[in-house]
Length: 400
Ligand SMILES: NC(=O)c1ccc[n+]([C@@H]2O[C@H](COP(=O)([O-])OP(=O)(O)OC[C@H]3O[C@@H](n4cnc5c(N)ncnc54)[C@H](O)[C@@H]3O)[C@@H](O)[C@H]2O)c1
Ligand SMILES: [Fe+2]
Picture 1 (cartoon, rainbow, N blue to C red):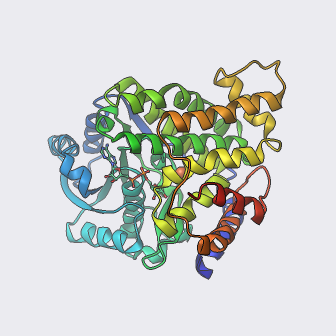
Picture 2 (cartoon, protein in one colour; picture 1 turned 45 degrees about the vertical axis):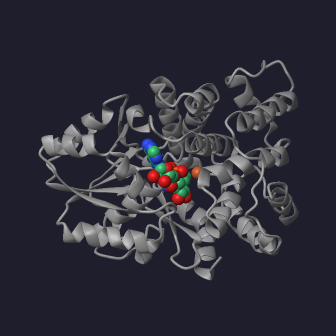
């Protein structure tokens, strides 16, 4: 991790505490259900915008799922330009190209259409465009003077909940280490959770992104920054995920299961934007940076191991989740309920085809990964700090 990134992660908690994490974050206006993308497009038309930059990735564009939205925006009187240059875990370079495209096309607003990668790229394009700056100037907390230009989002995966958070995760061009861009105006003005768009999401991406949402729900719930509001969203997301993720993986055309997962993902985003995440993310971010392990997959593999380590520290909170999700009765000891929840997480991973290990991790990288995870994890409100030994153990456990 570069010194600059270290500084950003270390200062994150302090800055958030001192600025806006202590008050609830704004929530986007949300349209939900089949056809909600069209409703969002009509709403954008009514906001009086002239030309919107649609930020997406090439595979999604080629699938044709964006076409009805482009048509709906045009019907609503909004001109469109498309930037399809987003790659998974977007880099500063990708975002800079998007900012250039925004200015070249003479846009006045941004619509993210894609998974967390497209949404995060779009957020920083909207912020950089408003401030006439490049991405590098946006990295950190509240770095920009002006709020992002009007920004909207259509998530096409059910996982990151990025359409509800004030953070974008952008990777360094050379090292691929992830750095946060934090600004309250990164929360979109409005979003659509449209299950129709997720119908064709491949099973392995449905599974991995769904586990990202579960990780958000659990890490925010057991963390020390939880509030009544984040607990409500965390618990609701957990139940929706345990009840619907297996079906969304088995039968991607089941729009009820897709819609439930889209809501769960959104609730997870609403929870983490106030309560943040924990060591699962700290390890997974670094696996993504070092080896390109997809964010949701990294979380899915790491989550049960971290829960095993925290089961005594967070037994009461894990027990709440188990009871809320119908895994046991309140009369049972917290330790037994926590056990049931953790066993269900292991089982869910197996049921939806998440591998237990990955062959990308190299022995010679482990110490650097441990150091980076300890640094990042220390900036999150985890129930307790983990030791280097514990992080090392998790990495060894998921190394094939
Ligand atoms: N800002 C936040 O609050 C936040 C939270 C968690 C994760 N993230 C970030 O989000 C990124 C991961 O996002 P992701 O997991 O959604 O994956 P992604 O956006 O990288 O997409 C993964 C793949 O799925 C494909 N895809 C997406 N939607 C599809 C659809 N409907 N049909 C077919 N294919 C589709 C994409 O083309 C891409 O190839 C990471 O960079 C992570 O750091 C951000
Ligand atoms: Fe995540």
